[in-house]
Image (cartoon, rainbow, N blue to C red; front, top):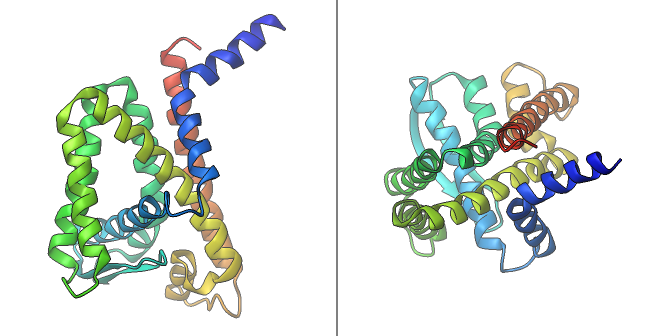
Length: 235
């Protein structure tokens, strides 16, 4: 009994900063304090779609993110099933990778730098600069802040990586719950279902199945990252 209690306490201690950030994010989730971070994570979601399109030979026409946390990446060509999955699953994968690379601080700094550079670069290229375009300003600004944190010092990079890792994982799961609960036809899973010829408004079950698979993949990645960190520290 004592050994088990000691093990659980060790796990909590190992992930204390992640738990602290998770608690703070959830406590202030619907406040102006967390809103900019939620907005930026939606941008990461759209950048994931765009990156998947470019990797699979497609073309990115536009990336937009709105203050109400909606957004879109207009894509032409590419492998659509992978592009659709890249938003939700990609965010969870980035979050899990930031967590896993805490074992390798230099690699963690590189991952954080890649996220920041990709967001700033793709915003600059694919988001139009218009009056009141918050996504252009926050996309470039937020991306540059991550790049600066990654380059500044190991400690700054670790702080940025822990917070971004938590926000990416939380928001990917939050997106699944809210989108599928209210508007399955507007989600990436619903859009993929329609792409395969099944209207999610008439038959939503394929959209739910796709989303369930994405959730399980995302949770598996998060769990494996946490488990690898715990095992490496001898817990």
